[in-house]
Length: 165
Image 1 (cartoon, rainbow, N blue to C red):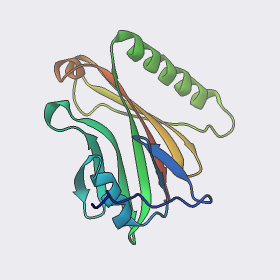
Image 2 (cartoon, rainbow, N blue to C red):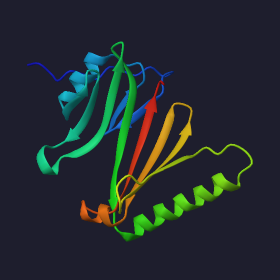
Image 3 (tube, rainbow, N blue to C red):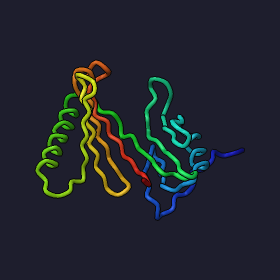
């Protein structure tokens, strides 16, 4: 009887991120990692060397994260914390965005946050707030406005990213 391929052990000196209970480290080899992930999750290839991890299929599928490779080694991994709906979470996120906007405007020194706004579609406002520290980033994305409501609802998405670049 053949057992499922094992995900390679991580080296203690490499940065790592847990995605769906799996520790993925920068520099891990591509094929053993993908084999182990395929045995437990649905993988969709988004480009030659990048994949998204899903739990389930169809309309009930849940995005768990993603992984990308350079020279057959992990160079990028992301964990999707989820999408959050409803007035309270949106109010919290927009208040946080406003506070960070104020901090950026009033600060004389560097701020460890990046805020970008897009409004290419009338009635839709997308704001991304990114907190960075070394190879790690946490990104909060806010979709709000009448167009967002029409396209499935105002929401806040949160993801964590680890990258070599």
